[in-house]
Image (cartoon, rainbow, N blue to C red):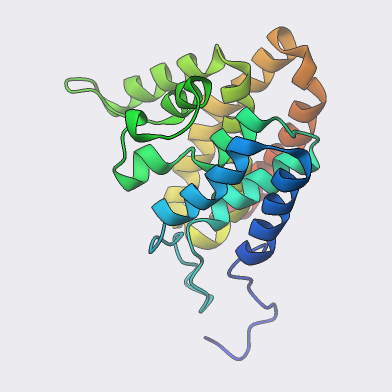
Length: 216
């Protein structure tokens, strides 16, 4: 790395060990039984997996940093629901670790949410059509909708250091087309999450506008 760089580039925003301890403590203190099991299950299933590396940093970030940051974000927003925190922690295990929904040792509601959050492209369907259907399904479940917004919030927060310019442009466009409309659905249909959605929209919109101004 260049010694003349003006800023130090962070390879991670928060340390996964500290976040793990925070969620583990929250689950124990509040009696969140599924969350207590999910944090261990998530760690074991994602063992050996890493987030996309920032080329300007020497840090290798374990994949669990992502669901843990989402869970910490959720609790900071006042979400202490056992179903939602469990779903957040394991939202990528079916898509990324080879387990099936039936393998998940959690409640039917958790499985339903994870199913909605797992993106697949059916045979004979183009990816964009599959993506449109994916977000449509999510929008009918308030918990899945909020989790998806937290997920995208985390991803846009780290994309500048991990994506090529081409990938950044594509991700910004995808977010504006498919994710931002979810905020209108929350405002209209899920008033209990309006304040949560406002904070998430503020965060995502700010990052998108900063990135657009820098890459134009």
